[in-house]
Length: 290
Image (cartoon, rainbow, N blue to C red; front, side):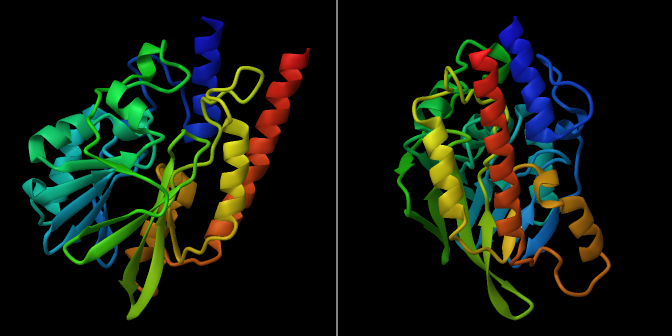
Protein backbone atom coordinates (compact mmCIF):
# COMPACT_ATOMS: atom_id res chain seq x y z
CA UNK A 1 0.00 0.00 0.00
CA UNK A 2 2.87 2.39 0.83
CA UNK A 3 4.35 1.76 -2.61
CA UNK A 4 1.06 2.60 -4.31
CA UNK A 5 0.74 5.85 -2.35
CA UNK A 6 4.31 6.77 -3.30
CA UNK A 7 3.67 6.19 -7.01
CA UNK A 8 0.52 8.31 -6.88
CA UNK A 9 2.30 11.12 -5.07
CA UNK A 10 5.14 11.19 -7.56
CA UNK A 11 2.78 11.27 -10.51
CA UNK A 12 1.03 14.27 -8.99
CA UNK A 13 4.21 16.11 -8.13
CA UNK A 14 6.37 15.51 -11.16
CA UNK A 15 4.36 14.24 -14.08
CA UNK A 16 1.32 16.44 -14.42
CA UNK A 17 1.84 19.30 -11.98
CA UNK A 18 -1.89 19.26 -11.44
CA UNK A 19 -3.86 20.15 -8.35
CA UNK A 20 -5.58 17.34 -6.53
CA UNK A 21 -4.67 13.67 -6.41
CA UNK A 22 -4.28 10.77 -8.77
CA UNK A 23 -6.11 7.76 -7.43
CA UNK A 24 -7.49 4.59 -8.90
CA UNK A 25 -10.27 5.59 -11.28
CA UNK A 26 -9.74 9.32 -10.68
CA UNK A 27 -7.07 10.95 -12.87
CA UNK A 28 -6.48 14.72 -12.65
CA UNK A 29 -9.54 16.57 -13.90
CA UNK A 30 -7.74 18.34 -16.75
CA UNK A 31 -6.70 15.01 -18.24
CA UNK A 32 -10.36 14.48 -19.16
CA UNK A 33 -11.35 18.12 -19.73
CA UNK A 34 -12.27 18.75 -23.40
CA UNK A 35 -10.10 21.10 -25.40
CA UNK A 36 -10.97 22.88 -28.63
CA UNK A 37 -8.64 21.49 -31.33
CA UNK A 38 -6.37 23.86 -33.19
CA UNK A 39 -3.67 24.00 -35.82
CA UNK A 40 -0.17 24.41 -34.40
CA UNK A 41 1.36 25.05 -37.81
CA UNK A 42 1.17 23.70 -41.35
CA UNK A 43 -0.35 20.18 -41.22
CA UNK A 44 0.11 19.58 -37.47
CA UNK A 45 -2.92 19.85 -35.18
CA UNK A 46 -3.57 19.50 -31.46
CA UNK A 47 -6.50 17.12 -30.78
CA UNK A 48 -5.94 16.24 -27.12
CA UNK A 49 -7.51 17.35 -23.84
CA UNK A 50 -6.46 20.20 -21.55
CA UNK A 51 -4.05 17.93 -19.72
CA UNK A 52 -3.00 15.24 -22.19
CA UNK A 53 -1.57 15.93 -25.62
CA UNK A 54 -2.57 14.13 -28.81
CA UNK A 55 -1.41 15.11 -32.28
CA UNK A 56 -2.89 14.83 -35.76
CA UNK A 57 -0.63 15.11 -38.80
CA UNK A 58 -2.57 15.33 -42.04
CA UNK A 59 -1.37 14.23 -45.46
CA UNK A 60 -2.92 13.70 -48.91
CA UNK A 61 -2.54 9.96 -48.38
CA UNK A 62 -4.26 9.78 -44.99
CA UNK A 63 -3.43 10.90 -41.50
CA UNK A 64 -1.08 10.10 -38.62
CA UNK A 65 -1.98 10.27 -34.93
CA UNK A 66 0.63 10.49 -32.18
CA UNK A 67 -0.74 9.32 -28.81
CA UNK A 68 -4.33 8.50 -27.96
CA UNK A 69 -4.56 9.21 -24.23
CA UNK A 70 -7.07 7.77 -21.77
CA UNK A 71 -9.85 5.75 -23.35
CA UNK A 72 -12.27 8.18 -21.73
CA UNK A 73 -10.84 10.88 -23.99
CA UNK A 74 -11.10 8.98 -27.24
CA UNK A 75 -14.61 9.94 -28.33
CA UNK A 76 -13.82 13.62 -27.78
CA UNK A 77 -10.50 13.21 -29.58
CA UNK A 78 -12.29 11.71 -32.57
CA UNK A 79 -14.78 14.58 -32.48
CA UNK A 80 -11.85 17.02 -32.44
CA UNK A 81 -10.49 15.44 -35.62
CA UNK A 82 -13.89 15.72 -37.32
CA UNK A 83 -14.32 19.31 -36.08
CA UNK A 84 -11.13 20.25 -37.86
CA UNK A 85 -12.66 18.95 -41.09
CA UNK A 86 -10.87 15.60 -41.30
CA UNK A 87 -12.20 12.05 -41.21
CA UNK A 88 -11.21 9.67 -38.44
CA UNK A 89 -11.51 6.87 -40.98
CA UNK A 90 -8.59 8.45 -42.88
CA UNK A 91 -6.18 7.83 -39.98
CA UNK A 92 -3.69 5.31 -41.38
CA UNK A 93 -0.82 5.28 -38.87
CA UNK A 94 -0.74 5.39 -35.06
CA UNK A 95 2.42 6.40 -33.23
CA UNK A 96 3.25 6.74 -29.53
CA UNK A 97 5.53 8.91 -27.43
CA UNK A 98 5.77 6.41 -24.58
CA UNK A 99 3.90 3.38 -23.31
CA UNK A 100 2.26 4.78 -20.18
CA UNK A 101 -1.48 4.55 -19.62
CA UNK A 102 -2.11 8.30 -19.92
CA UNK A 103 -0.71 8.36 -23.45
CA UNK A 104 -1.81 4.96 -24.73
CA UNK A 105 -5.24 4.28 -23.24
CA UNK A 106 -7.17 4.94 -26.45
CA UNK A 107 -4.76 3.40 -28.95
CA UNK A 108 -6.31 -0.09 -29.03
CA UNK A 109 -9.83 1.20 -29.68
CA UNK A 110 -8.66 3.77 -32.22
CA UNK A 111 -6.76 1.02 -34.03
CA UNK A 112 -9.92 -1.12 -34.18
CA UNK A 113 -12.05 1.79 -35.32
CA UNK A 114 -9.72 2.89 -38.13
CA UNK A 115 -7.72 -0.19 -39.11
CA UNK A 116 -4.59 1.95 -38.81
CA UNK A 117 -1.12 0.46 -38.47
CA UNK A 118 0.45 0.80 -35.02
CA UNK A 119 4.17 1.59 -35.10
CA UNK A 120 6.29 1.78 -31.94
CA UNK A 121 9.79 1.25 -30.63
CA UNK A 122 11.12 -2.17 -29.67
CA UNK A 123 11.71 -0.90 -26.13
CA UNK A 124 8.05 -0.01 -25.58
CA UNK A 125 6.54 -2.83 -27.57
CA UNK A 126 6.19 -5.25 -24.60
CA UNK A 127 4.38 -2.67 -22.48
CA UNK A 128 2.04 -1.71 -25.32
CA UNK A 129 1.17 -5.30 -26.13
CA UNK A 130 0.69 -6.26 -22.46
CA UNK A 131 -1.01 -3.03 -21.37
CA UNK A 132 1.21 -2.50 -18.33
CA UNK A 133 3.63 0.00 -16.81
CA UNK A 134 7.07 -1.71 -16.94
CA UNK A 135 8.32 -2.40 -13.44
CA UNK A 136 4.89 -1.74 -11.90
CA UNK A 137 2.95 -4.53 -13.59
CA UNK A 138 1.10 -5.25 -10.35
CA UNK A 139 -0.49 -1.78 -10.22
CA UNK A 140 -3.90 -2.12 -11.81
CA UNK A 141 -4.57 1.61 -12.08
CA UNK A 142 -1.53 1.99 -14.36
CA UNK A 143 -2.82 -0.60 -16.83
CA UNK A 144 -4.51 0.04 -20.18
CA UNK A 145 -6.00 -1.98 -23.02
CA UNK A 146 -3.15 -3.74 -24.88
CA UNK A 147 -2.51 -2.77 -28.48
CA UNK A 148 -0.68 -4.88 -31.06
CA UNK A 149 2.38 -3.28 -32.64
CA UNK A 150 2.43 -3.87 -36.40
CA UNK A 151 5.72 -2.16 -37.16
CA UNK A 152 8.64 -2.22 -34.73
CA UNK A 153 10.84 0.86 -34.94
CA UNK A 154 14.47 1.41 -34.13
CA UNK A 155 16.30 4.65 -33.55
CA UNK A 156 16.46 6.75 -36.70
CA UNK A 157 13.65 4.97 -38.52
CA UNK A 158 11.43 7.12 -40.70
CA UNK A 159 7.66 6.81 -40.88
CA UNK A 160 6.24 8.22 -44.12
CA UNK A 161 2.74 8.79 -45.46
CA UNK A 162 1.42 11.00 -48.24
CA UNK A 163 4.73 12.80 -48.73
CA UNK A 164 5.18 13.54 -45.02
CA UNK A 165 8.02 11.93 -43.07
CA UNK A 166 8.63 11.71 -39.32
CA UNK A 167 11.87 10.51 -37.74
CA UNK A 168 11.87 8.37 -34.60
CA UNK A 169 14.51 9.22 -32.01
CA UNK A 170 14.56 6.62 -29.24
CA UNK A 171 15.22 8.59 -26.04
CA UNK A 172 14.76 6.06 -23.20
CA UNK A 173 14.50 6.73 -19.48
CA UNK A 174 10.94 7.83 -18.88
CA UNK A 175 10.06 4.51 -20.51
CA UNK A 176 12.37 1.86 -22.01
CA UNK A 177 11.44 2.84 -25.57
CA UNK A 178 10.48 6.47 -25.12
CA UNK A 179 10.35 7.98 -28.62
CA UNK A 180 10.82 11.61 -29.58
CA UNK A 181 9.46 12.49 -33.02
CA UNK A 182 10.71 15.16 -35.41
CA UNK A 183 9.25 16.45 -38.66
CA UNK A 184 9.59 19.53 -40.88
CA UNK A 185 6.78 22.08 -40.88
CA UNK A 186 6.35 25.14 -43.07
CA UNK A 187 5.70 28.19 -40.90
CA UNK A 188 5.38 31.72 -42.25
CA UNK A 189 7.13 30.71 -45.45
CA UNK A 190 10.05 28.96 -43.73
CA UNK A 191 10.68 25.27 -43.14
CA UNK A 192 10.99 24.66 -39.40
CA UNK A 193 11.98 21.58 -37.41
CA UNK A 194 9.21 20.45 -35.06
CA UNK A 195 9.88 18.11 -32.16
CA UNK A 196 7.21 16.09 -30.34
CA UNK A 197 9.32 15.21 -27.35
CA UNK A 198 8.69 11.99 -25.47
CA UNK A 199 9.43 12.92 -21.85
CA UNK A 200 12.35 13.05 -19.44
CA UNK A 201 10.45 13.48 -16.18
CA UNK A 202 10.98 10.94 -13.40
CA UNK A 203 7.25 10.75 -12.65
CA UNK A 204 6.37 7.33 -11.21
CA UNK A 205 9.75 5.81 -11.97
CA UNK A 206 11.94 4.26 -9.30
CA UNK A 207 15.59 5.15 -9.84
CA UNK A 208 17.14 3.55 -6.73
CA UNK A 209 17.62 1.15 -5.09
CA UNK A 210 15.14 -1.02 -7.06
CA UNK A 211 15.12 0.61 -10.51
CA UNK A 212 11.96 0.63 -12.59
CA UNK A 213 13.88 -1.31 -15.22
CA UNK A 214 17.58 -2.26 -15.52
CA UNK A 215 19.75 0.59 -16.78
CA UNK A 216 17.16 3.32 -16.30
CA UNK A 217 19.57 5.84 -14.76
CA UNK A 218 22.11 5.41 -17.56
CA UNK A 219 19.29 5.70 -20.10
CA UNK A 220 18.12 9.02 -18.68
CA UNK A 221 21.64 10.43 -18.73
CA UNK A 222 22.30 9.31 -22.29
CA UNK A 223 19.00 10.84 -23.35
CA UNK A 224 19.79 14.17 -21.69
CA UNK A 225 23.16 14.22 -23.46
CA UNK A 226 21.56 13.42 -26.79
CA UNK A 227 18.76 15.97 -26.48
CA UNK A 228 21.36 18.62 -25.67
CA UNK A 229 22.77 18.13 -29.19
CA UNK A 230 19.42 18.25 -30.99
CA UNK A 231 17.65 21.23 -32.53
CA UNK A 232 13.97 22.12 -32.46
CA UNK A 233 12.32 25.28 -33.72
CA UNK A 234 8.98 24.06 -32.35
CA UNK A 235 9.03 22.13 -29.07
CA UNK A 236 5.93 20.12 -28.16
CA UNK A 237 5.36 17.62 -25.35
CA UNK A 238 2.93 14.97 -24.01
CA UNK A 239 1.47 17.29 -21.34
CA UNK A 240 0.45 20.85 -22.33
CA UNK A 241 2.03 22.45 -19.26
CA UNK A 242 5.40 21.04 -20.34
CA UNK A 243 5.51 23.51 -23.24
CA UNK A 244 3.27 26.34 -21.98
CA UNK A 245 0.59 25.49 -24.51
CA UNK A 246 -2.16 27.65 -23.00
CA UNK A 247 -0.06 30.84 -23.09
CA UNK A 248 1.16 30.16 -26.63
CA UNK A 249 -2.35 29.40 -27.86
CA UNK A 250 -3.63 32.67 -26.43
CA UNK A 251 -0.93 34.52 -28.36
CA UNK A 252 -1.60 32.48 -31.50
CA UNK A 253 -5.24 33.53 -31.42
CA UNK A 254 -4.21 37.18 -31.36
CA UNK A 255 -2.29 36.89 -34.63
CA UNK A 256 1.29 37.83 -35.39
CA UNK A 257 4.31 35.50 -35.53
CA UNK A 258 3.58 31.90 -34.55
CA UNK A 259 4.41 31.70 -30.81
CA UNK A 260 5.08 27.96 -31.03
CA UNK A 261 8.27 28.80 -32.92
CA UNK A 262 10.95 29.16 -30.25
CA UNK A 263 14.36 27.61 -31.07
CA UNK A 264 15.58 28.39 -27.54
CA UNK A 265 12.95 26.35 -25.71
CA UNK A 266 14.38 22.84 -26.11
CA UNK A 267 17.71 23.47 -24.31
CA UNK A 268 15.93 25.23 -21.47
CA UNK A 269 13.44 22.38 -21.02
CA UNK A 270 16.20 19.76 -21.17
CA UNK A 271 18.32 21.59 -18.59
CA UNK A 272 15.35 21.95 -16.23
CA UNK A 273 14.42 18.30 -16.58
CA UNK A 274 18.00 17.14 -16.11
CA UNK A 275 18.29 19.11 -12.87
CA UNK A 276 15.01 17.66 -11.61
CA UNK A 277 16.16 14.14 -12.50
CA UNK A 278 19.44 14.45 -10.60
CA UNK A 279 17.58 15.84 -7.58
CA UNK A 280 15.09 12.96 -7.67
CA UNK A 281 17.89 10.41 -8.00
CA UNK A 282 19.77 11.89 -5.03
CA UNK A 283 16.60 11.90 -2.95
CA UNK A 284 15.80 8.29 -3.76
CA UNK A 285 19.39 7.21 -3.09
CA UNK A 286 19.43 9.05 0.23
CA UNK A 287 16.17 7.45 1.28
CA UNK A 288 17.48 4.02 0.33
CA UNK A 289 20.63 4.52 2.39
CA UNK A 290 18.77 5.69 5.52
